[in-house]
Length: 339
Ligand SMILES: *[C@@H]1O[C@H](CO)[C@@H](O)[C@H](O)[C@H]1NC(C)=O
Ligand SMILES: *[C@@H]1O[C@H](CO)[C@@H](O)[C@H](O)[C@H]1NC(C)=O
Ligand SMILES: *[C@@H]1O[C@H](CO)[C@@H](O)[C@H](O)[C@H]1NC(C)=O
Ligand SMILES: *[C@@H]1O[C@H](CO)[C@@H](O)[C@H](O)[C@H]1NC(C)=O
Image (cartoon, rainbow, N blue to C red; front, side, top):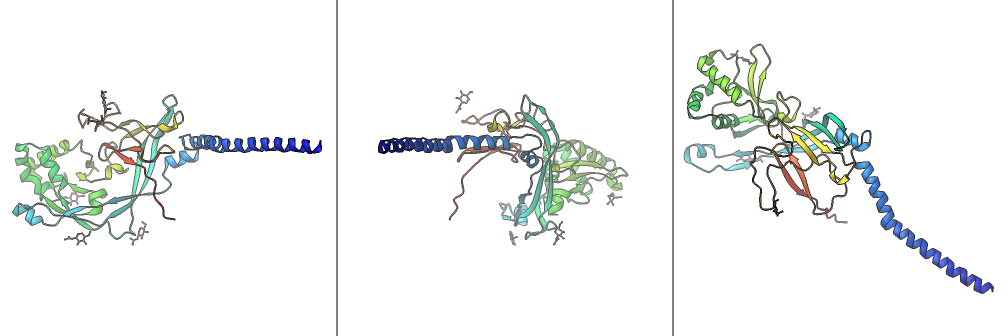
């Protein structure tokens, strides 16, 4: 009797134990994953006053922004002997880039969106092997722009005035040497209004130059009053708050991921001046699509500061880059760490 009972109990315990283990396996494989997933969603979606929200407002670490120049080293050969340019890659100029989101609006719950401008602060990393006061040789960007934007007659008028108009930071030459920090951020200034020997003709050319460059994001018209009225060329100043015009980095409307976490960070609309009318496509690339229906004009992807969680290996990650007005596709690969 006793024996049978204990046998029964053993069986009973075995069944219970099996159920328990089975249950816990199920729980591990399904339940825990589900819980982790819901945790990930609640911690990565953009919800006000969460850690993720703070990380979104300001990236907690600077991003490395590396610039390299390709300097022509056979300038005389190019100019006088029809030689092909031989380019020498410079050492890297490394900036620490701090990205903040500003002028936020967070009121469209139905669209599940937030919109904002980016503010970027560049700080030269002076621990690197280069200095931002180094001089580099480049193709004169203002001369190129002047030639591209003018017709033959205007070019004739321009030719006689370039020497005067390009003062003080530029020369009417194809290749010029400039300081890295002036070229990238501080500005190469030219076409000063206070230059008394401009004369009527060149003053007219100056006015024309100002109106022709009004839509270029690399050339700003600065008027500080007291005759300090001039043009300023920079490569990246438009990304910063020192920029004089509207922000060409644009205004982003992205998905908060509260409704669908897979949409987190995806750009819904991006607008910048006249570059994009509807916010979802650019009007500078035409309407043609490639064989796989990719279009240069499409605005899609994230702004590179926020991504959905649980990206799969080999998955295409779209990032919209405002410098080239294009989205780019990157892939996520798991690194192979040697243990
Ligand atoms: C090419 O660039 C390197 C730095 O990247 C520099 O050390 C070298 O002097 C350059 N060569 C010429 C011919 O300018
Ligand atoms: C590097 O930059 C930091 C912060 O701007 C400054 O305090 C430091 O003096 C700089 N070092 C050099 C060698 O210029
Ligand atoms: C014009 O103004 C600039 C900046 O203030 C100054 O450097 C330059 O000497 C002035 N030129 C003349 C001709 O007054
Ligand atoms: C591209 O789009 C067209 C029209 O919408 C469609 O007929 C075609 O199947 C698509 N091609 C691919 C590769 O997706």
